Length: 132
Image (cartoon, rainbow, N blue to C red):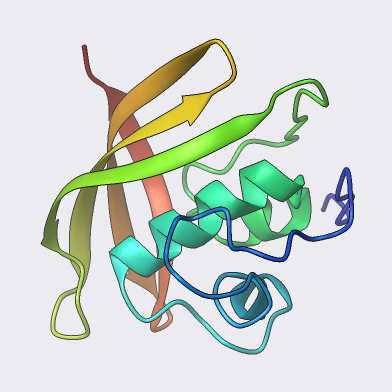
């Protein structure tokens, strides 16, 4: 499994766009011990993991059935914002959910509908469909 290799020190503000600081928002999920309570929270925390370069968290929260054997992040990629466009299911009362989002990066954006499932009670990313 890949080790956590953040590019820089964690930011003060959380990259996911919610108010509050990184440590109290997505950073608590990245640190382990606390699982994201919903598919949307997992989506936000995974976006933040991409933004800070936390490969270990991304691998840990990927469904075992679809997880890649190796994950290499582009060290030059700079994520600049996340917009949640829609959610379906994905709450404490569901076993599956989808989150449609637009993630901006320097030079463009990514529009995706991601699927999530619970595995052993924890939300994990299954796969995504690129839109646009």
